[in-house]
Length: 107
Image (cartoon, rainbow, N blue to C red; front, side):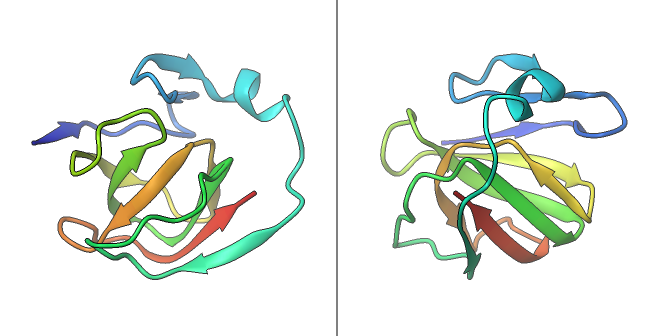
C-alpha cells in the first residue's frame, strides 16, 4: 500500500515524523548533528540503516518506508525540494515512484 503526501518541506516548515505526524522541521533538526552520510541508490528490495535525514540533490518525489512502518509498505513524499536535508527516519528508499535524484542518507 502506498500513500501519497502533497508538498511539504522548507516552504511550509513542516514534514512527517516516523509516526506519519506533521511536525516542525526546526524542532527535529535541533535534536542532533550529522556524523555520517551514505549515497543512496533507490532499491525496492533492500533496506538501509535507519537514517536521521535524507538529502535530496535533485528535487522530486521520494518513495520511502519510515522506520516504524510495516515491511513492504511505502509512502510517496511528493515534490521534495532539492538541496535540503529532510529530517526523515527511513529504512528504505524505493526505486518505484521515486523521481528525486542524488539522494544521500544522513546519520
